[in-house]
Length: 158
Image (tube, rainbow, N blue to C red; front, side, top):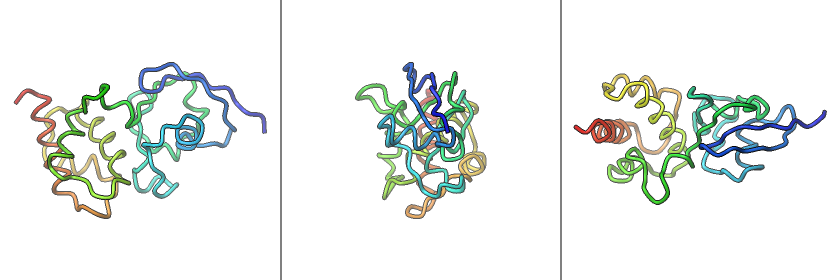
């Protein structure tokens, strides 16, 4: 198989890489670009640990080919903070103890950010529905839901 040259934007930065036609976006991010925030939990799109957005759409990067990122805008967990300033979701997850082992946390944060960009004032039910594709085996979900709600309130200026 012939390798593919990809030109994309990752976290706002123009990026180019070469990948195999069957290489996942997750493997490209982690192994070729050193963006190790996205985790491989299952490799089959069932856990959400590798969640990123591609052109604003939430996807499991283990199910997207790296070549599909050509010309796209990809956002990963590494793009959430602005320098040393954490995104409100990140800060509220820390403040509310909404994380434990951390394997699922990057994917949940990316998914929650995508939700708040579409719906800045979600109900608990809407948050639970939106995050249903992200599995956490450590915390339960109550602290995660509370952290998303408090971050949403801060982001709305409430």
